[in-house]
Length: 199
Image (cartoon, rainbow, N blue to C red; front, side):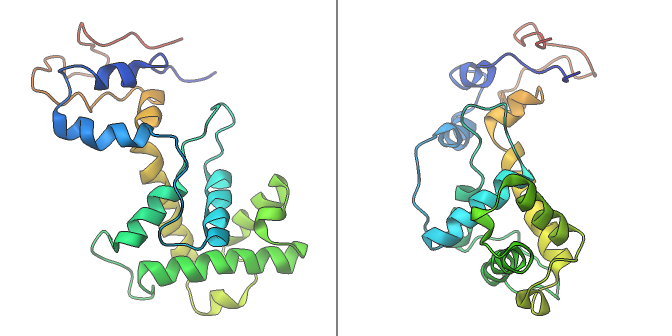
């Protein structure tokens, strides 16, 4: 049984109200933009590889238009942003992504003799599973800790997915309504302005 979530459109409607500060609205509205953004950091082929990998880690068959995760990673790397730390065994983020995505393609070639983006989804999933459990073949894994790369990739894609307003709507999160005035802070208590969960 699917978990309850807010009705579709709840977050879009909420973002237009005075319950959301201008700073929060300015941060979240661009995430709802579904127009195609050309890559800023990756070359086109590597960008499409990242899109394909993200789509297998976070498949979204129920969405008419999936939440795109690759543009968020691409923009971060283009701007040189980071969270301010990294494992000492890991290279800087840009190099880690170059090696890690290249390693995924090497694994695809070694196991199925085709690039990752040309594989059917079940074979793509086998490659992702091999990377996740540290058994993927490929020269690049001699220069990049496969377990750390997958951990970092998974963490970044998860953060990017759940920072999207539609994913927040899906899990019943309306914390973006950040103007003061919330009174019901206990579990399972709704403000009068909150919609009932969809069943």
